[in-house]
Image 1: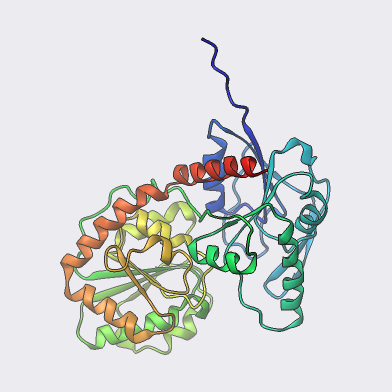
Image 2: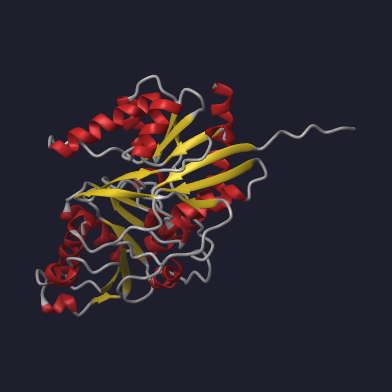
Length: 368
């Protein structure tokens, strides 16, 4: 009996830099029997990137070019773009580059183009904001949008009514986080924050909440992991007594993070804005109860309220404090939430993410 094999989907991704978390999903895709993958990066690394550079895989390439910086935004100009006829579908993880604009405005009619992005930040009304809004009109040329999380899905459905919108969040390799998981909780309960120590991440809010817990006589420890940034100034706002219960472990390379997640009993990400937040994936993979603000994109997809954690209104220190106090006063709730996160993590592996992409790409080719 002759079995007819389906040809592989030739998928070409354009991403900004070789992010360690995106590379997890790219590697899983490269291993999928139905995908022939190529990934092109617009630059080898950000000038202020803390990630150590790793060798590229055979399917990964850096495009020659340069970028123009405007505040925190970077506008890329690249050349020697690959021949699009070598692809069945192109996925763009960004639209604010000449590369993306050329592909969207001139070549999307020849080959299906998909935009893969987080929820858009609201307009501030400045010149840069107007430029971003103008560049975003090119997304009309996409065949579909792969939104990073359910909050982003709602955002793009409003911005581009009638266009196919798929939910493809960030997935990452959680294997190392799911190993050697301790029995939780321990004494004292360790609360973990992992990220850059800046106001956008809500570190100041967490410090305020933690000081209240210490003043209430609750037994806890706060472990901070990430780039120092504004932490020294933020720590001046809490008492010397509270600082005694805070440990700052500095920035850690991605491969070193699991050991810090194993030290924790609760994970908190109180951001004022976070398009996704891969550390939430990692916390779930490590079997931690997760507390996030509602401004964290990953919260709506990875947290089941009251089961494996809680979502609180962004900026509401009182609500954050109460959730933490309830956990500290109810150790069984920590143990139960820990088990719930670990069960959920199975659905958030890089392999699961690769299958999500494959299923979506098949749909897109059928749409075409």
